Length: 447
Image (cartoon, rainbow, N blue to C red; front, side, top):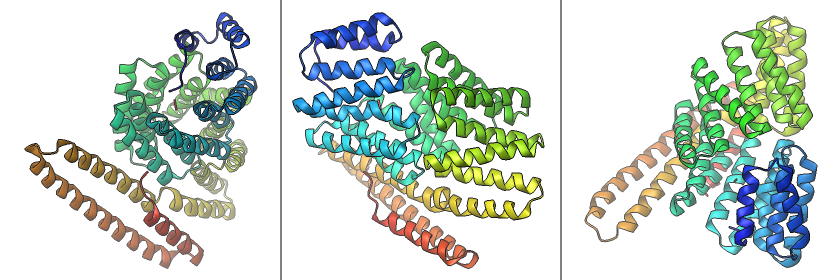
C-alpha cells in the first residue's frame, strides 16, 4: 500500500466516512496547499478527487490526473499505478471499458515491477472486470482466479470478498446460477464481517440476480429494497441505481407493470443526469420486455433500438445478444417475420460465442485448475508431515478428475462443433475453431 504519515492516514479514514462534508474538502485542500510536492501529496490528490467522484466526476478526473502527473515527476511508481483504481471507476461509469482496460493493464505492469503482491491482485481484478464488461468471460475468469490465488496466499479478506463476488457474476452470466450464488454468498459473509456497506450491497446484488434467474422473485425484490436503502444511507448513486434497476426487474417478473415502469424510467432519468449509459441500456432492456407484455409494440421498439445503440457503443456483447433476442420477439409479435428472423440470427451467432458450451467449459476448467494448484501448494507446505501421503492420493484423484473433466469437455465441444458444422454456415464454423484454439493457448493467470 502507499506510504503515508499517521496524520494523512487518519484523514483518509475520515474522508471515507464523511466525504460529503465541506469541512473535509476544505481540510484536504488546505493540506495540499501547505504540503511539499512529495508522495504524501499524491495520496492527498487522490483522496481529494474521491470527494468529487460521485457528483462531479470531471473534477475527480482532474485531481486524479494531477496525482498521476506529480507521481511521474517525482518517480513515485506506486502513485502512478494507483491512478488506475481511481480513474477506471469514472471510465466504467461512462461505459469507456476499452480505455479502462488499457489503464488497468498499465497498473499491473508497474506493480509487477515493484513486486507488491496485494496491488498485483487488485490490478488483476480490475483487468478481469474490464474483460467482463467487454463480455470475454474466459479472460475475466482467468484474471479473477489469479487474483483469488494471491488473495488466499496473503489471507486478505477484502480481496477474497472481491474475487468471490466477481467470480459469482461470471458464473451468473454463464447461466450457472447455483454456482454463482455460492460464490456470492461467500462474498456476502466476508462483507458483513468487514462491516462494509458497499461490499454488502454488491454481494447482495449478485445473490438477488441469481434468485431472479431461479424465479425466486419475491426474495430477490426484498434484497433489491435493502440495496436501495444502502444507497440512500451512503449517498451512493451506483448502489441506488442497482437497487432501482433490480426492483424494476422484480416487479416486471411479478407482472406489477406500473411499479416496474416507474423504476425503469427512474433509472433512465437518473442515468442521463449522471451519465451512466450502462444503466440506461439495462432499463431499456427491461422496458422493451415490459412493453411487449403490455402489447405496446411501437413503444417497445423504441426502447429496444435505443438499447441496441448503447450496447454497440459500449461494446457490451452480452447485453447486445439479449437485445437482439428481445428485438426478434418484438418483431415477431408485430408480425414482421423478416426482421424477427434477422434479429434471431444475430442473437444465435453472438450467443454461441459468448455463453455457449465452449465458454462454460473454459471457465470450469480454469476453476478446476485453480483448485488443483491450491491443493498442490497445501501438500508442499505440509512437507514431511504424516498427512502428505494421504493428501498425495487425493491429489492424484483430483488430477484424474480434472483430466477426465477436460476430456469430457473436449468431447462435448467436438460433438457440438460437428453439429454446428452441419447446421450453420462455414463462417460460424471458422469462429468456433478460433475459440477452440484460444482455449488451448490460455493459461490461468478494486478497491
